[in-house]
Image 1 (tube, each protein chain N blue to C red):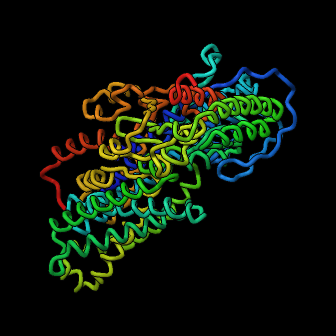
Image 2: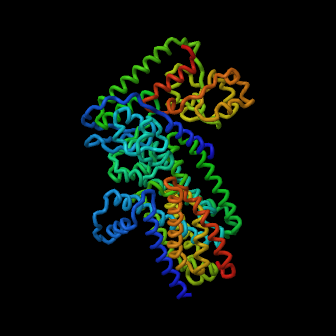
Image 3: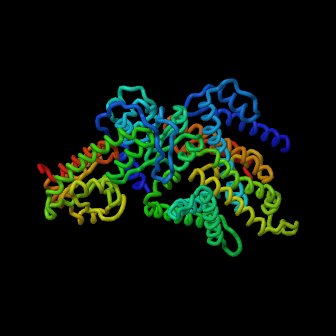
Length: 298
Length: 342
């Protein structure tokens, strides 16, 4: 139970720590908002472009800034740390991963609340108060782009969204071009380590998608978040270990892991969480970082 | 005794009103007491409120009020269930927790959150239904395991309760590992607490609480007679076995309502019944209503404390119930030791 809680918190922090935006696109008058589907299959529609947005995820905050909606944001979480502009502005903090204050959110009188996921009760509560809630929880890079374009439609920033998406696609293509030059035999087997309890990212996670796009092979083949036991961890013998948690280097320095060639040879790398596990507009930078660790100099 | 009871009930009622108003005036967002009072009077008695900020009105009427009422109901539910279990099993250690009914309700609720969304069914109203089913299964198992030769000895019932509790907790942990996408929802719910719960949850808990309490009150006289001795009760025309079953099922229903909404909140069902028993004696006709007020007041205070002491971060209310409850209980026990009767 404790481990589950630990990993959940770790995951949350991971998700929350990420994201970034490309340079804010030029201010353009917003066009008409369109109805979009959210992750739960619900249709969300705003009568007019939002004026007061509360973002409950760092990645959403970055996306909103990337769409030029930074000045419409009235509330963010304690984890929202990018762009730098956030630090200079008086902006309400409405809580963190497990402690969101509904009272605070409602007091900000938002016309849109954007998040990846909310506890069912809170989602219902906001809906009952007539506040539009947009939940979108990307589990792949393609879905990150899709999320940006839906957020653009929802807020009447279609054009800005298209620009951001086009730029990200360009960056993805560039990396794909470099990946294409890696021969099948050279492909690196990777383990994405989330914490010292050996929780790892398996199939169906954003992290797995990033590994694949960077030309790596995820050694964890089962789905979602998987906790390996020590034996399985040693047996999967990856070529590279990527980790995101503080203290990862000390953890892997433990003598019991020295039997792993990648640990002995120092093929263990710390990823910048806010890039490589935050499903926001800086995701391509995270991908770039992963690629450079898997295939240095390529 | 009568005068004492009258005083006691008046005091409890007064305290309940004070505590509820105090809870309403406390929250993450600072709202002047005047505004809170104005909105409350407006909602309750349609007294027109002079130009209050509509946002503040929403916070008070749609967020704080349902939460405070829900807390009162949850506390009342757990306390009433505690009285019923303690009385019927004649066991001072019985409460929804120790006899496994809480774990049963929790397992049922977990199952509904795990299975129903996968089948594409909304789980809102199903959670307490499944919780009730789980509570009944736990109760039945404990009853069967704990029975020795047609009697329910204290020791075997408690042992059976502990065993069932751990077994069900293990099942809950197991299902969380298998939960995948639903894990977040289940986790959030298990941690417990009354946050993020609006008016629909108040409806939900009152659907469990009202019939449960009504049954318990209806059977409270028979319950008193049974406690004097089953033989005597039988000779006075009480259907002993039937009454026992009704009381157990009603207490499980009330427990299920509370647990499926707020997760596992300990201690309330144990100490409030004792406190009330110490103060007004063992007559269930008065014990039930008194524990409604006592449990409600207790959980309202602890929840207010939980959400304000480290605001905006909320403490799990279960920590606070144990923290405030244990010393209070010891105090009562020491002062009233000689008067304590079952």
